[in-house]
Length: 175
Length: 154
Image (cartoon, rainbow over all chains, first blue to last red; front, top):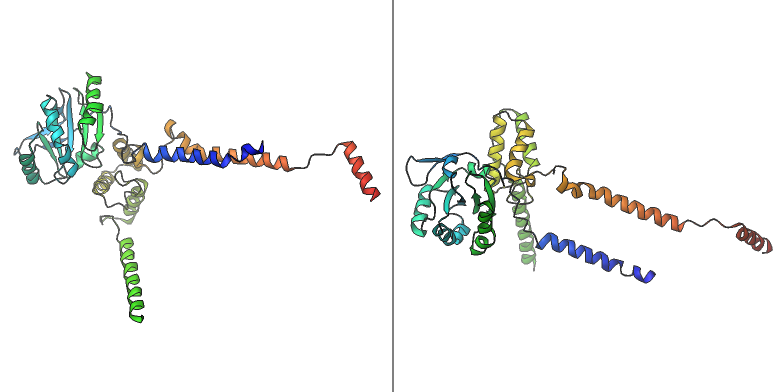
């Protein structure tokens, strides 16, 4: 009877170990759930990168399923995912860029050097569209359906794994 | 030996001073508010929000670029005459419950809000049980007779 009691501390330890393991390892605390899932993409009116006076609005994002990718030249992870974005563009999916808190001249040069996967990029110098999107770092990638509703969001680099396991199934789910 | 001690002490003082200046430097952009009330309200609001990038810093104390942007947004909303509740809703709609240091009561936060009460109830229950077990059981009549007899004999 009392011998069973001897195991109480062990039980306590095991419980704590499991709770801490779940808390620390299974969930990256930097990944916040997006408050914007299934919400329409916020409205905006911003210049198009490298095309003079042309501007783009939310209406330019509706009509087909597309990826919207938040990027900047100061963001090394953006360069890391660049080739994957080009590959995704080559599959026929439209990719639109948001050049986030960046210098436009640098951004144009960066695209010239590394290739441009974007149908177009809008210039969000002050990060105001970023705030409306709940962006807290670059890169972030949103999947929009034909009505311009956000159906999926990924924080961090998009690589082949993310494409295969998350984005492609999400696209399949909305079509 | 003396010189070395002096150097040690000098290094310590220098380190302390370096830390002190770190603490003194505030991350807040020095917005000039027209009246002290608005400035106080601004500070109070910022302390309510968590910086999305830095996990455990308020918007008031964080130097992250996103915190700068969000402070600017709060400032703008204040100038547009929005209420505290509207400003809270603005940030919550974009960044989720995560930005609120005071989490709303709902299904997913039920455990967070009530686990202290639950824990207290469990502890009180255990204490009551332990106290009961320790209380001397009432003696039966036969037993108390025996006790009396034993005491009388001695």
